[in-house]
View (cartoon, helix red, strand yellow):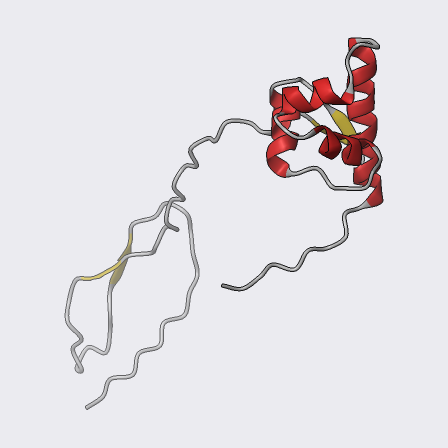
Length: 136
């Protein structure tokens, strides 16, 4: 199994998460502590402290719980991250195959007449060149 290389988390994202968690705590009042927030998120209090101190990136599952269960949202790079950012999956309509031209030959090639006749079943006009090489 190949190990995925971790990249450094964008400090701007760490700050955005930290500010969002801190603001959420402030709106709940002085009795709402890191321990209370940790309990609501289902994680350790020390982990919440690391998020707020910008020492650790928030895990995706915890971020989803914060947005969905607690209604936390925040701005990052001019985008609002919230539960609204995770819409329900929608069915994608199957792509229609491209229209193909159909040529009907209503007679076999006759060497003495040296001609072909084709019928186009499309309303739009078209211009084309047809080259045929008959192996003999």
